[in-house]
Figure 1 (cartoon, rainbow, N blue to C red):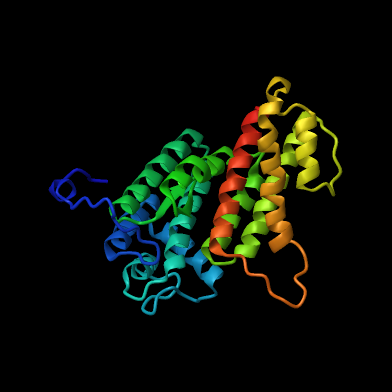
Figure 2 (figure 1 turned 90 degrees about the vertical axis):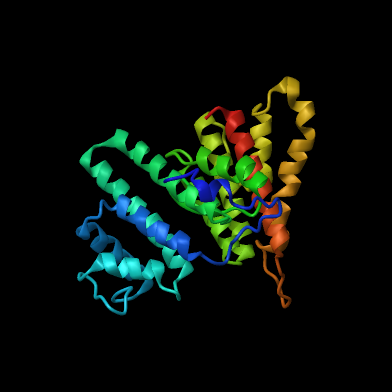
Length: 296
């Protein structure tokens, strides 16, 4: 990505710069088109495969009104990226899918060292474009995540996704990322349910790896006690973590128990955005803490 040109250096710098969430500027979409070309090596067969997978997902015979599947697939994807009535979700899906498709090719060819370099290069390009367009999104481990708060994203959400992006905590990663996506789609109840699932899975994985006994039916409060009883926090520091233990037990489980996990009777319970954001932040912090404390 070409940077530090005249227009970059002389751009207005407003401390109250608006972060964009609900639209994709044409400049960004055109930049994505060039990045897609780099990802797919400008090879028509690669465009066809990505186009076909997207058509399957969206239940369409083609993403283009001009070009059918298997004919000018590159132009079909270019049209989807650059047309005025673009589909926000489709574009993000397209970029994620193209990267994952290319990663699978690299793995199948046995070029594992190339995979890390490829991911870093592509993500850097995409995140640079997001930043230049004042977009409130960032790609982390090949997944596009909304950044409602720069500090929260940098200190909690990104480290949680990165730390759980391995085979041992794969299910935790999936649940945590899906929880964020549920929040982004406005389904705050499912967001909180998935957060609790992610945290409970984290505790069970730690118990499994450490050989600590628990019942499959044990919920958060029980699992937390098992981890503390087995000195997940060093004994000499345990008194200092009394407040943390209270936070873990009273901060996350009641959010789900009171708002999302049980029957609602005749009155629908509404989970506000601020509560979902709080649950994401506190769950991410707690997942980070227990994994780092476990040494896994």
